[in-house]
Length: 146
Image 1 (cartoon, rainbow, N blue to C red):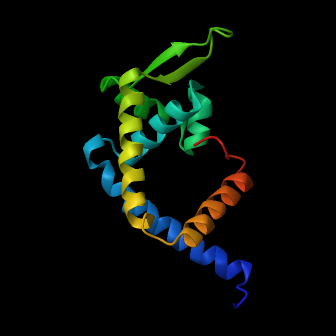
Image 2: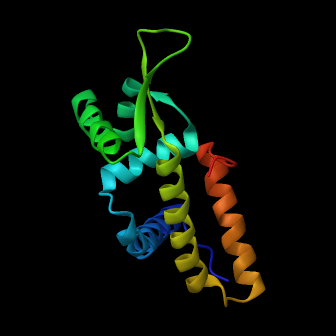
């Protein structure tokens, strides 16, 4: 077995991740959300209520852009803005039950697509992919927060 350099592995992993995301994203057609709204809703569903300023930073957009995104999610009944219980000056965005249901259905559809892609791989390859995903999530500090 040829030992690959970290640079070559990073390049290959980057390409694989992009292609995998594009492939899985084809399942999102039924969600009727553009990328920014789907991403923000995902943060709210899987991360819980979050101040708008923090959400803007997480999504790497300006505060006015996140306000517009949350307004669109509110209009669709997928998110709401609420005042913080501990600091009434802080406005939090949170997913509604409809938003959570939509995101969970969308995630399940993407996982089904990825399962179709890898489901018939040999056990050894599945174990390798599983371990690689764990390593990446651990390095990002997000293991357990899917």
